[in-house]
Image (cartoon, rainbow, N blue to C red; front, side, top):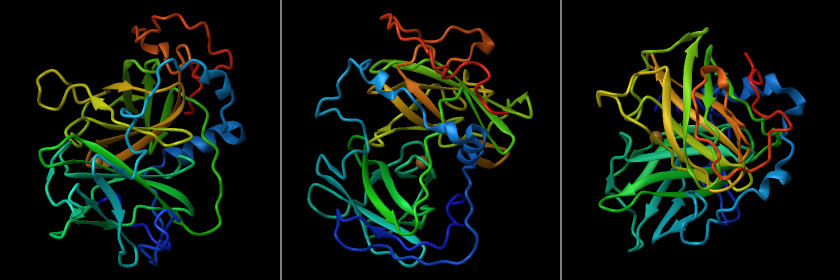
Amino acid sequence: MNTATKLSGFVLGLTAVFGTAYGVGQLTGPVAVVAAGHDSEGAGHGGDARDEGDAGHEGVAGHEEGAGHLPGGLLVSDRGYTLVPVDAPPGEFAFRITGPDGRPVTGYDVTHDERMHLIVARRDLSGFRHVHPELAGDGTWRIASPLGSPGVWRAFADFTPSGGDPLTLGVDVTVPGALTERPLPAPASSATVDGYTVALTGAPQPGRTTTLTLTVSRDGTPVTDLDPYLGAYGHLVALRRGDLAYLHVHPEGSPGDGRTAPGPQVSFATEFPSAGAYRLYLDFRHRGVVRTAELTVHVGDQGGTTGPADGRPTTGPADGHPTGPADGHGTPGHGHD
Ligand SMILES: [Cu+2]
């Protein structure tokens, strides 16, 4: 796919989970990081990016995720389906999904325009990529490796087996080399990528469905002609810091439904399973180019991500948590322009 064809130069190996090396790859050429949001945020926040105060938020979570309804992506095998990376030629990443009968699954339903969504992120939440591999007849999914810099990456396979329920499985994959740790950027109410600014409104609370609205502008002008992408005007993935729990986020409205405008606002129904820090990744397409805006939110902060710029009410805390954003998380102007 367009976002995955330019990566190079890494030898891939699986973690000890599988005990052997897979997907040895060596390519030449430049590394293209399509999702530039992280880097620009890092520049904007500098060394103070490691967000403080998480310990103070942990107690806010009153909603457990008991076994049986875990968030997606935490398990390599669930409901009889298993994510199995397989040997791949240099520069490729390949895997299969095996089914309850132990054989590779070859039948998938299309969700959000694709049969398989492969999402990867380094375990420090940098380097997000969302790509769509191709299925071979034997049930092997292949794609130019989306993995980037050295470190431990989490690969998520988000799919629906034919006639079954949606499922997201995850597996760790190591890219050998000298690791440069990247602190999680501080919570922000906006992010920039390639001249686009994506502003976030909404104050998510743990265990409760909240509407998050992302507003896309370019050089200060609202973008009102977003292209449909994956059956929506944006595709949002959220990953939880600490375990990279993968959140399914559903867009509200779809292109052509007669009520959903092609920007500047794109809304999502989100439900975060716990308080704490999450990294949000919004894929959107404008004039044929897919870009990813990234920002950090702190779930459980009062108004933590709510920018009052448009004065619209957002989903408020009905249970009156007294914790205010005393540390200034998400206050207007916290973004980086
Ligand atoms: Cu996808």
